[in-house]
Amino acid sequence: MTEPAGDFACALPSPPGHGDPAEANPYQDTEVIRRVLHTARTIAIVGLSPNELRASNFVGFYLRRHGYTVIPVNPREQTILGVKSYPSLADVPGPIDVVDVFRAPDAVPGIAREAIAAGAKALWLQYNVISPEGARVAADAGLDVVMDRCMKVEHARHLGRMHWLGFNTGRVTSRRETAL
Amino acid sequence: MTSDAAKEPGQAAAARQAGFETRAIHAGQRPDPYTGARAVPIFQTTSYVFEDTATAAAYFNLQEYGNTYSRIMNPTVAVFEERVASLEGGAGAVAFASGLAAQSAALFTILQPGDHVVSSSALYGGTVTQLNHLSRKLGFELTFIDPDDLDAWRGAVRGNTKVFFAETIGNPGGNVLDIEAVAKIAHEHQLPLMIDSTFATPYLCRPIEWGADIVTHSATKFIGGHGTSIGGVTVEAGTFDWSNGRFPVVADPSPAYHGLAFHETFGVYGYLMKLRAESLRDLGGAMSPFNAFLFLQGLETLPLRMQRHVDNALAIARYLETRPEVTGVRHPGLPASKYRPLVSKYLPRGAGSIFAFDLSGGREAGIRFIEALSLWSHLANVGDAKSLVIHPASTTHRQLDEDALAAAGIGPGTIRLSVGLETVEDLVADLDAGLCAAGAAA
Image 1: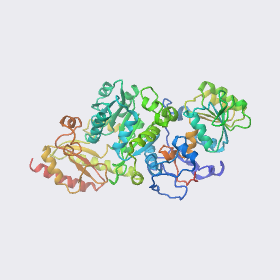
Image 2: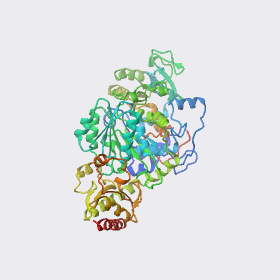
Image 3: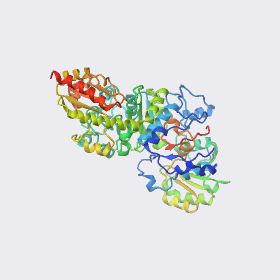
Image 4: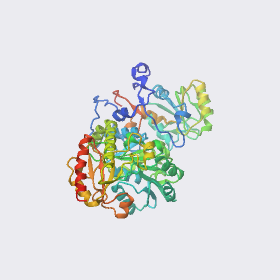
């Protein structure tokens, strides 16, 4: 993966009922999103569901297909997507680059502290996982933070094939890309 | 990985929002990674070789963005779709074989038998016919209302209402919709507002910025601008809450995809995924790659063309106002129009280039007028580079009875113009010949 030069941006839609995230939410910086997607190798997904029809399962499946090591964190399961699931971030052996969260917002501050303790470099909060407190805890500890964005969608927007299905990636570029 | 790319000149542009003209030329395209082709290649293929069986399965399960079959997606068509979505400010778009296919698929995605649609009565005749016919064949209820009457929108809502529908600029009466007000009423009732914005194009008005949820176009018109290709496109804002309880057909688990709940799983992109993966797949009205290529050529110059269209149209409307044979010029941008405040708000660059006027001599004067023209083309289309003229009562709106004609604002002597890009003095000279013929026997 070669990181493309910066694009011209376009306005992007936000999920229902969230107002204008660019005003209210400082954790959607394109440079941060790109940096996380380009540097991450290992992604722990907190709240990953074993149900193939759930959004978290789509995201985990997709990220693994695109070369990331996905570590499920879900105390109710033994294995998800064919790999071992851990009860908590503290139980995960080895380094974690990104903690990607599919949990209720009030669980996020605690997850942020666990992410810091685990040495994670980034905290990523999915659509509707909105916790300014949790984001602040992680940011204060020096982690990159993304909030109310989907990691699959952002990967597909910046590195993947989202444009193949007519979605608005918000990207404008004259640069020739490497073949996917 | 990180690195040197960050120091290249392009990086300075990262924080910049690309302008409308830039997006009209670039949005949706990444120069082809294999060939470097600068123009958008025409991928004239029905199908695509899968990398392996696991990848094929991921495509069919919608777990990965991939090409399977050109009835459902195509790389050339996808550039067109993203470009229109970018210009309208939507989450994405799905292209169709025609504007009416785009409308019917957009509605098919929302409706099921027993549902109810509230629609403006000031519509393209083909759309009125489509809605009437579909409602009878597919078993949904339909209420046409005066789009200028906000209380009529409010009063028409029922428990089974699923969508409001209108045109940005009504055809051919020139009604300008108060989009923000109608969107507010729709949203108060947890309903989406769907707008056909063919006459405005995103250069003149972007309904999503005023609260609309779904925007459709006949790309056949100004988007192409060349009159060579039939096509349509549906854009969705991505912000409507389809899981609000009123839309089980969108939100509930889909039997066609093993129980997948499109809106819950795909969020912002849920409606668009369903529109493509179910409605386009099943109704089958796909845009051809070659037509998408031609529409992309049109979009590159959309801003320049539209400005000339609206400038020429306003000049001609003013000229017609001076003629004794003409009783009314229904161009919403004229100072006398009751829609002038709405034009200032929603269409500040110009009120389109399609408008109607009435001849005092009625039906016979209309026929003499059209037969005396030699530059304006008498045909059933609008939005071409060439100037077009038609007599709606005998052609496009012929299927409507007198009440429906009146509801659409059409009289026996109504002439509709679609003002093109020719030298405006030439257009006026030809109209002069027509008006002299129309007035001669009056």
